[in-house]
Amino acid sequence: MTRILFICHGNICRSPMAEFVMKRLAQEAGVSSSLLIASAATSSEELGNPVYPPARAELARHGIGCAGKTARRITPADYDRFDLLICMDRANVRNALRVFGGDPEGKLSLLMDYTSRPGDVADPWYTGDFSAAYRDIDAGCRALLSTLFPA
Image 1 (cartoon, helix red, strand yellow):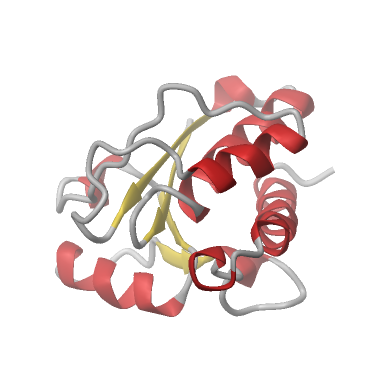
Image 2: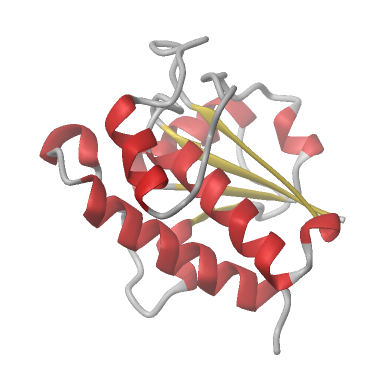
């Protein structure tokens, strides 16, 4: 089983979107039982809060639910608990490296690095463009899934 943790700043927008998009794609591909998929924050600002309403609405537009998800923060133990620690942007990587005390096993990556357009996932917190974030996340998750399960 491959254990994936998606990481963003607050765990209320991009990382939970990635969590639930990936869960849907894994289900559609018939590989759900081979993956454990979760998400978390690098900060403690939103702990316990649900997915941000515009992010939840964007997921719903694509037929994806996220009921019951609340924000949690990464812990040093997550480094050992997960095989892949996938961040939404470079700031998330820097913050995760501090929490994990480094990345000796090379588990940290950016979601968009799995695509032909490496870099950061669009951040809707500042732009309000949840559709752009969804497009990046969907492309990244599809590319990740095809990396894990080549056709």
